[in-house]
Length: 322
Ligand SMILES: NC(=O)c1ccc[n+]([C@@H]2O[C@H](COP(=O)([O-])OP(=O)(O)OC[C@H]3O[C@@H](n4cnc5c(N)ncnc54)[C@H](OP(=O)(O)O)[C@@H]3O)[C@@H](O)[C@H]2O)c1
Image 1 (cartoon, rainbow, N blue to C red):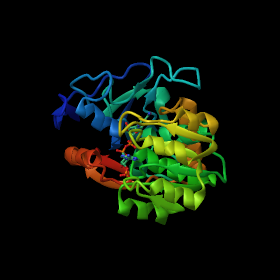
Image 2 (cartoon, rainbow, N blue to C red):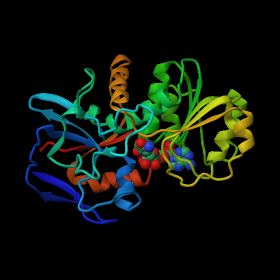
Image 3 (spheres, protein in one colour):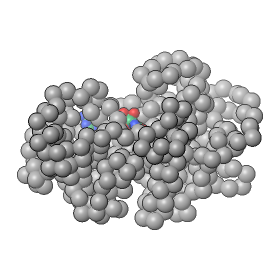
């Protein structure tokens, strides 16, 4: 079978012929139709991810066939029995185990799910990691309810877009931020009430004028600008952090956090139960993932460049099927 392999930090992802993997008793051999990229793949390529090992087949998201059945795979393995936090065995497909950029992948049988009925294989490949992360952050951790005001930061991101679609489906008033005018316009066209440019240092003032603050913030950036989020959270607001694209959080005011009774919550992917609930939510609301572009797997390095440069609006999909 053909696999696309990363051999070293900073290297290109290169094609390689490999044996089709052996299937253990609890395993399932999935023929991959489509894979999708996540920022995780960029962090691994840059060498900025825990537990690096090479060579590695990247890719946490896939759709394909188990026998004749169309399936997708929950990429979060071994969550464990505690719904509140993952076990120390928790793993993500695509490191340490070889991932989706391959003609065949062996995954635990328990991770295999039927596609939501309204999605094609191509659309379904966009869903697993980012959809799961967004669902847990917004619903389980954020406790977001219909009618609340929700801010999703960095709307170009894969997780951010799902959080945006899910919040709209919940009946929230949703606002977004983005560095790109084009992405802000796309979000407004999809139903955002307002879209702010987070590179303009007046943006939080504009938001306060428009809305008087927000109840829930879903953030994957962290970094210097995180302290602004504390200011625009309403009293009893919840700020859910699922990523740290901009690095260390600085200059946070304890006074603003305690006086406003804010909750600052961490969230990572999700449990098997979260994944099933996310699929049911997507099915119920007929949510269709936003796809930025579809590349043949031979152009995976071009797709990785697009993600690294944050040019995408929605998921980057790779067509694996030969
Ligand atoms: N904890 C978990 O389980 C988990 C799961 C998935 C992802 N993550 C992490 O979450 C982050 C996003 O992942 P992804 O796959 O969705 O990434 P992605 O698709 O590559 O999105 C990255 C986006 O971050 C936005 N951004 C950059 N600087 C920002 C800032 N200062 N303020 C607000 N937004 C900013 C940009 O949005 P604009 O282009 O709109 O400006 C960019 O498009 C990554 O760090 C990833 O590792 C964590």
